[in-house]
Image 1 (tube, rainbow, N blue to C red):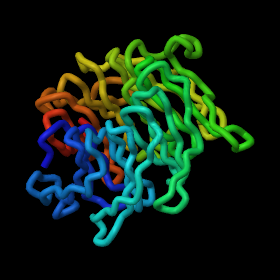
Image 2: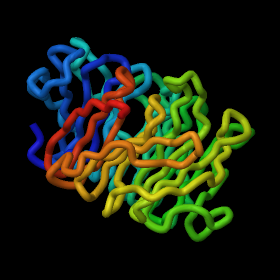
Image 3: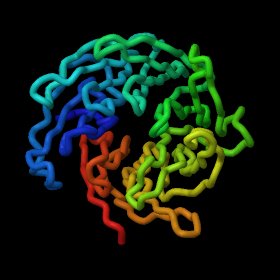
Image 4: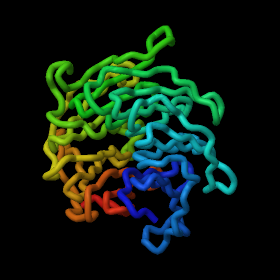
Length: 333
């Protein structure tokens, strides 16, 4: 359905076989499988477009954990919020969040779904609190990054926010103890980063290890990927592992920027990059990370986003500048 680059694709957290894709043409589409159990291309119904809310590229789309709200972040400087209507795959545009001075690059819901974070080219991170499904209040506009903020992602169980930026740093934000404001708790990497550890290029994405892994373990780390062609794994400690510190750095197989990464419940990290490939990395018993799978020409252009399915831990989805969305089944060799 898309005639331009597909910047982002995400699964419906509550309904298997439903994904949402956002595009450079300003649209967001919902894609539904006729048979939720099938992985063949023919199993998908023709995509349908959500009511248009933006007149410029939609860089990100995110569905709240409860599945009742959907947010889309756009280069037009706004973040639109939709409310699920009837039937279950229909959405009604509810409101638009305005405040960023320029392009909004990313949006993400907190674990409880009560908070929505946005970030943008204006170097800021905003935190919005939902009052019902159609009213949002900005509770924090956070400054500190020295460049575009490429990504925001929440800790899997706590209202702790991580952002990644063109300034080569990862920042950790949390609400102050008195609950009146938010502030930066940590700067990881970049010129002002703790200990000088971190990336040596634009940090495109960060992804937390899932709280519940397939092997029964509990996730306590976060991974980030960068234009330097490397991953950094940050170890968690303190309350609910919300304090991050440099753990290990490892090279990837991408020969261009790593644009997206996602840590799956299966324990593997998936990545997509500017070299058109999709790759998967696994951690050995010795703590060393290795590439365990690679699709060299997964797409005909940059792979902008990869994401493991919350319904099938071995299914992966990807989107690309070539205008396509693809699903992949991963098997451990």
